[in-house]
Image (tube, rainbow, N blue to C red; front, side, top):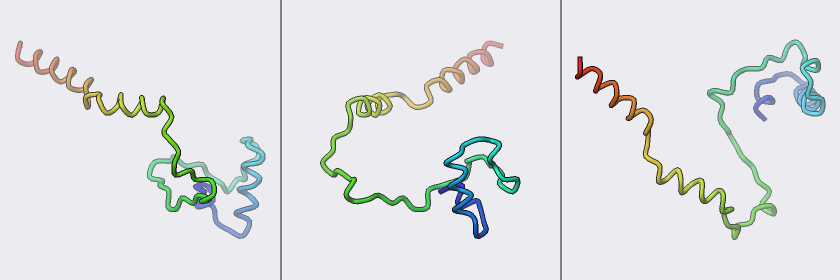
Length: 92
C-alpha cells in the first residue's frame, strides 16, 4: 500500500505486482525511488470481519511484554546519565 501510494500512472498496480512477486533490486524500474519510511502513516486499515475473533485472548508472551513495559521506569538510562553529569559538574 505504501509503495502504491508513492507511484503514479496507469501501470501502477502492474508495477507493484511485479515488484512484490520478484523482489530483486534488478527488477526495480528506473522511475521508482525508495524513500525512508519516516512520516508515513496508515490511512485506512481494512479487515475481513470473518477473520476477526472478538473473543480471542492475548498470548501470554505478549501480555508479559506489556506488563514488563508498564512496570519499567521511563527513561531510566537517561536519568542515570544526567545524575552522573550533575555529580561531575558540582565536583569541579
